Image 1: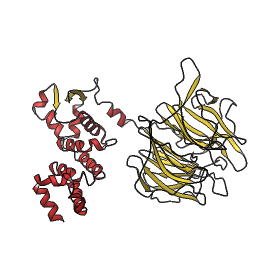
Image 2 (image 1 turned 180 degrees about the vertical axis):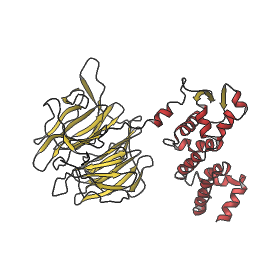
Image 3 (image 1 turned 30 degrees about the horizontal axis):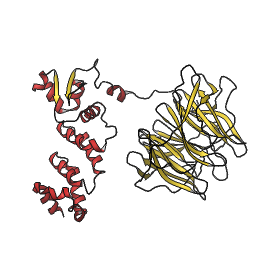
Image 4 (image 1 turned 135 degrees about the horizontal axis):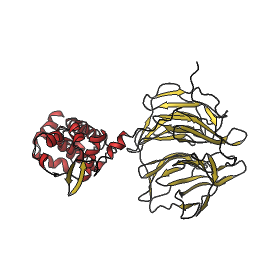
Length: 490
């Protein structure tokens, strides 16, 4: 008996209304709708805005007010909070570098969305371009590469939403060569970039950009990678990247590939009834499906609409981590209260005791704290204590920051959390410089962070002539034991 398998299907909307044919449109998914803006319609660049409601199974052309972007194609739209942002593109005459915001929250008593121009307070706006990579991480918008009408690019720029500032980002690692129109997709704190065109070659190299550390890495993989192409699309569903379509230089493609982040394996998926070969298409994920709209097949621009259901049974995302985090400072479900820098933090005795020997002794071992209504945590920043609780509840620390890493290491030592201590050491080692290595070494020495201590000593020995001239190193005379270790290691 043949088992049911994943397949493409044409989306049958509840009405015949749909956007006109187009390629190179900008798109995002926000809440329960797919939004599509602009693109190339065959006779010119478009500036219309459409939404497909997945709940109502219907397209609708949206009214807007405010300074809408002019017609354009090949935009990398992103969502940040309650808005869509669009940078640059190509108008058919000019390459652009304007920056616009569409607020998805409707105006009072109006079925209208509002556009506004995003004007930086400081920093240099990136040069004009289309076919670039875009991604949002935390409170920043990133763009990479593209084509400005005369040159292919590989520069990386960051726009800070809170500060309203553009900056050119200096990165580490093997930076991709210049290119336009690769595919890209964000996963966790990285964006993954495949292929593209540099004016001569269609490529199929595969790169990872770590947006936390501004670091490039060439992705190592097994299995057959997709063939060279550009104007294709990538999306992420759960722990895999899916890549579809594009232009090889000769043909518009209709193959679908999967890359597993867990295993590092590319797989070409053998699926039934794929959409016709196309480039410059819209591709987005909603729930357990990939949706593809429009594009160009080499002869005509398209407005057909397809769904590829990745999972035949839609399994909701796991919520364990979020559920556990909701217990922190929960007045209804907590049974112990701490005071940190004069601020109250509520928690759960059983979870803390199960995860930490220190808290087990404190809460159940007859220590005086067991009798106190509120346990005072002295000599520790409030934010650091909350991060300790987050680790105890989830076994992860989301985004260790430079300004808190050392304090978190000290807290991990205090509460006997060896895994957290190791995570802090691993982060701090990447931030070692000539100026801070001495201070980092002293901290590691006094808090028994032995791995970090060895790394610091090796760094000092390898760069001794430079480090010894720093003020911090000259002041280390109060640590004769460490000085002796360094001299013996040299």
